[in-house]
Length: 378
Image 1: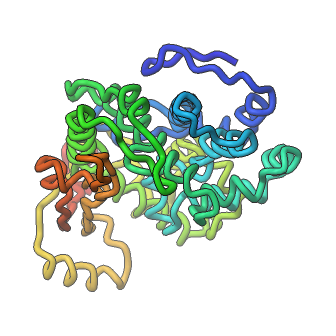
Image 2 (image 1 turned 180 degrees about the vertical axis):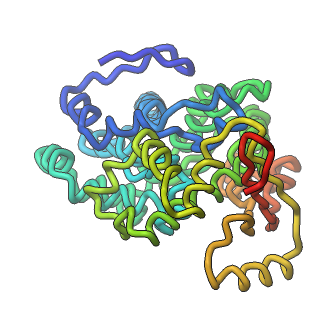
C-alpha cells in the first residue's frame, strides 16, 4: 500500500498483515480525528489527522530499523513486527479532538489504546495470529519489556516526536524550517537500550527540534485562544453527560463511535436543547463569527484556587479557570549524545537545550459572552 504524504513524499506499507492492520476500523477511525484538536479555530490549516500521523510514525520507525541494520544493531525479526505494529497502534486510543478529550475522560489516551488493542476483536485477532498481542500492548503501555522499541517510539528523538513535530510544523504555517529527521535518525546508535546521538554535528539540529517543540506549544494547541475552545468543549460535554445525553464512563464500543464528525453532530443537535446552559455553550462553540466572544486573563495561583473552589458547586457557563503546565513543550532532558568519547545528556553540552528545559505553571480565567446576532448578550 502506497500513500502520498506532504512530509515524506510516499509512505509504503509492504507487508500484507500490516496493511490489514492499518485497515482495521479502529485505526481507520483516526482519519476523522484532528491531530491538533481545536487548533484549527486559530490556524485554519491545522486540520491534519491522527491517521496521517500514525502512518508517519510507521515510516519513521521503518527508517530507524534500516539505520540499525546498517550499523549492525539489527532488531530481531519478531521485534521489528512489534515495533511497526506499535507505531500504527500507539494513538488508536485518542478520543475526539485528540488530547482535548482527555480533559473529559481524565484518562491518558495510551491507556485507552492498550484497552482497545486487547478488547477489539479485529485488532486482537490479527496480533494474536502473529503472536505479538501482549508484546504490542506492553510497548504502548510502556512497561519496560522492550526498552529499545519503547525508546525508538516514545523518546524525545523517537518516531512519535519526530513525526508530530514536523507534521504540526508543516500545517501550522508559523514559518520555521523543518526538522531534518533523516540526519537525526542516521546519527542514532543504541547504547544501554536507549538511542544515543553519535555525531556532535547533529546538536544544532536537536536544538532546532526543541525550539520547534516549544514554539508549537505556545503558538498552536496551548495558545489561550485554542485552550478556550478546549475548555468550552469540555464544559458542554460534561453538561451533556450530566443531562444524560451521553453515557459515561465510555465503553470502548461507545468511545470508538465518537469522532470529530460525530461529536460535531451531537453539538449541533444540542444547540437546540431545552436546557438553556447547554444550548448556549453549544451555540458559542459552533460560532465562528463575532457574535460570541471569549476573553482570557492571566491570574495568580491563589486566584485560580479560589475560583476553582467556587466552581465546585456547579459549572458556570460564563467562566472557567484553567491550569496550564508547560512541561509538554519543555525539553525532558532525555536526549543523549556521544561527547568526547563519553555519553552526556544534551543539556550538559548545549546551553540552548538547557534553557528550554525550564518548566512553569500558568493560570488563566476564560470568560464567555453568549451573544445573539443582534449583539444582545444572553
